[in-house]
Image (cartoon, rainbow, N blue to C red; front, side, top):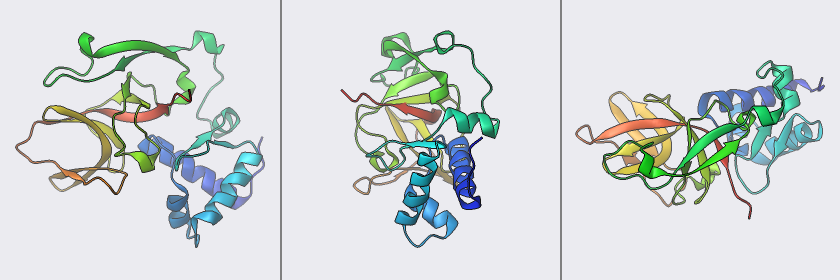
Length: 215
């Protein structure tokens, strides 16, 4: 059992809630805003303390590089004891470029299959999508990353989604106000996409995790 201060537990709960609701952990700035810290540095100090206690793992170089450890997941009651990892591998198809108007999981789009540990993801994914471009850079999603996607046709505000808009498939943060849907980038070099009511638009899935090659 990991012993945490009240503040550390509060931050850990915030991370867990963000992962459950959006598929990704919060940034330092989001933690600071939510808990009333004066700066992101204060959030960073608490995160480092959580990492030292083994509650989280921090991946360097990304704004959302925070992962709950297996010890934390077990203590939070969100993961039961699993069989040997070799028995729990998921085989996920990797989707490359998607042809206009065809299903995202059509056979001609499948480039390869990957065996992955399901414990890496906030929910069980259905496929991997190769990310193209840097519009989601500040969410820690980079060009060439493999985004784990759970098939879904609806989303809550703030979730990172895979959406089809006309002939394009894009990864963005979902925002709906009234009847207006916006697909928001996480890079100030890119503009939000406002979905026209007459456009061919569909949600293909929710982002539930990320794989990155460090080669």
